[in-house]
Image (cartoon, rainbow, N blue to C red; front, side, top):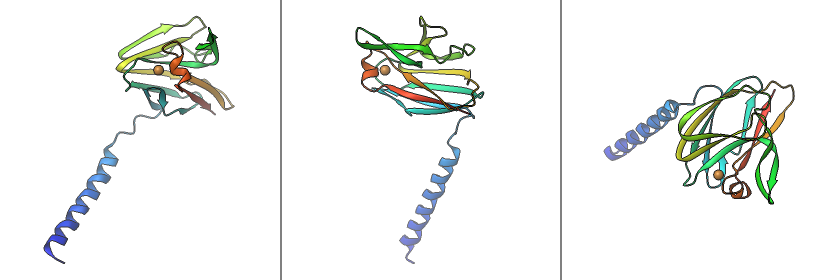
Length: 164
Ligand SMILES: [Cu+2]
């Protein structure tokens, strides 16, 4: 084997080891933590699954250039033909979640336990709550109704599934 071949082999080996270590070092986050990236115009991932009765930490990160919001509920309300929110809040029968972060704001909605978390560009918020208990699979929606429902219409909505 020529010297340069040994050198190349060594380099490839070094890269492989570094790559593997980097993958190991990447924090997976504590159990129950789910990171949702908000952008124009989507939630990523678009579907999240949580376990009934388990503590959940939703980490919201606005990586977009616009303000985005998170509202979790079901049955979309239409106002002047535009999607404007949900008729039923996911938190209607749950204790109020703890919300912390930066560049964010919480606004109450007119439905029981209904609220929206607004994030400025670069904003981050962590919503901590205990998932409802259920012995069925229950489906909810998460949506952004910013700019008179335009974000929602552009596809900024996703699915929250509560599993047994
Ligand atoms: Cu949005």
